Amino acid sequence: MESLAIGLPVLERPSPVTASDPDRELAERFRDGDRAAFDLLVRRHQKGMWRLVRRYVKRDADAADVTQLAFVRAFRGLTAFRGTATVRSWLYRIAINCALSWLRDHRREQPTEIAEDALTDANPAPAQLSAGDDRAVLKRAIAQLPPKQKLVLELRVFDDLSFREVAELADCSENTAKVNFHYAVKRLRDILGADHEP
Amino acid sequence: MSRDTRDGASERGSELLAAYVDGVAELSTDERRRIEARLALDPEARADAAELRALLDQLRALPPEGSAPDWAAMERSIHHAVGREVPRPWWRSWRWLAPTATLATAMLVLLVMWGRPATLGLPPGGERIVGHDLGHDRRDEPAAFAQPGDEVVPLWLDGDEVDVTLSANDLLGDPAPGDPASGDPAPGDPASGDPAPGDPASGDPAPGDPASGDQLGLLPSGDLAWVDRLDDAALARAERWLAGETANPGAPPRRKG
Image 1 (cartoon, each protein chain N blue to C red):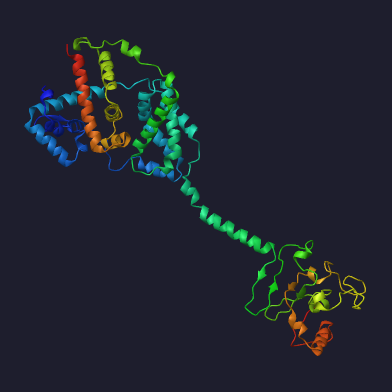
Image 2 (image 1 turned 60 degrees about the vertical axis):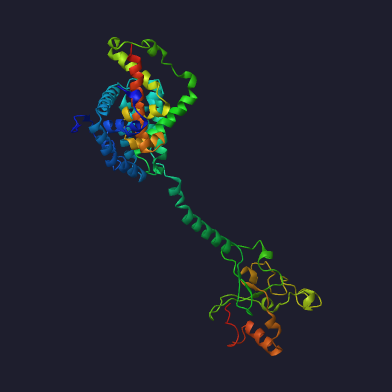
């Protein structure tokens, strides 16, 4: 944590920005025929991909199936990976595409989150909020964000991607991703503030 | 917080504030200086940044959705699902197409050349010779090889003798015996006085007979007009030579047989 002269704590967390993609070497080894390199990529990214997919697909088992499908597609396409993006963002793009495709095919089978929302008062007073309620309110607030801001916020906060990777996945410039992130957090704060106002 | 009163210019100046708070290292030097200058001068911006920081901490504290699966089982499942062989991109597969196609074409050309009589061109003015039928037994296709009436000439290279037996009819039968254009009666024609080829009386095998010259793989010639231009003395000499009676140093290489 870095502290500026003005006393504002600024996060100096390990930067997700990597000048050299740590997965690039594994991708090159795989292209050279090293099958084990792909297993290492799976071990490294299966949790992140599953978490990402799970935000789209509401059943754990379905999310596992979609994650596996995404890795199968990645396996078939990794030799053609051009390296313009990081391997991680490339994998996550495949995962998002697989999840969206799965949602299209199983639209009517998806469980709704009414039950979860039904447990939460629409405008609970701050004093009434328990930890569980806090989580539900936050999730509901995130769900109210415009799609692009929601995507940028989730990729940044929950998937811990760099702004460059967020930009690759959101199909925008890195600067646009930063600005979208700023407005997403601000809007979220506004939604939460409105909820908490008596 | 006076967010409603914030003017547009101020908003544009702070639109990287969340990115600055969340990961200062990802901002360019210019962006970082701009935000820090604003924070240094504007207490409201500092309060804003602190709120954003707190909210981001809250978001990151959210537990992930769902119950995590058995990662080892998922890893094994993916390992089995993708298979063993590393797929190769199409351009790596096609990289071998050019040499393979070249080799296949070369082999095809060779097969075609060796599988049918090749026509060898001679220099202008030279005699046209129908080439050897190599590696392919054409006994059942006499029309494709030595047609009745075709001349068969010995093939020699650089004076090396050809180890073949050749009858006089094979050499002197141009144009084809029996051809009206030749003016000669056909062998076997009573007018000729010669027995027909294959006739036991002729001593010559019939075309297609295993003993005939065309079974020896000799080359039918397109034109042996030079034989017609020989005078009687030369023809007699040639016949004697063919009969093995004399050696003729000026004639084509001596035949064995």
